[in-house]
Image (cartoon, helix red, strand yellow):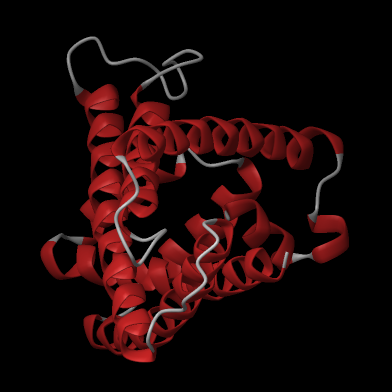
Length: 230
């Protein structure tokens, strides 16, 4: 629970810096209209409570000046990088504990490993987000475009995040769970698939719970929306 709490806390701390960095990147290469369009496509796949706070932050950053966004992106990069690094350190420590590692990592090697894992996770998140946005834009504007949310129970909106999560977890179990020798591919792939299925189901159930059964906003205010976003 201690390692899980550490990962959750630093993930919570990194949410808004990640949004600011993403918008700063988009605004550097796209127009305001294109930023808003892609943000709307990405927001369509989120639960309502998370969508509201995401769109509010997107609107604020999209209407800000380029200098303001650049400054905010710089500070967001510092804060988000620190939070992600600490969160992945907690995650790696938990994985080592599960794997019954008797000899801990060296200080320098452990921090360097956490840095590269965080870098890989951010790159994978960027690719998956781009794939989701692209599929949503094609769904809205391509031939035979379907209405929003018309992809049925299973669509590319759920395929890309699930595929990205499965790949990320598989690589994490393979190369970061043990510092002596890499874990075999078979248990790494099996663990990645099982963890992806379990986390996807729990995310859907959480979204249903907070939207239809017990809205968190009444108790936790804006923090509840951040929890839903996580």
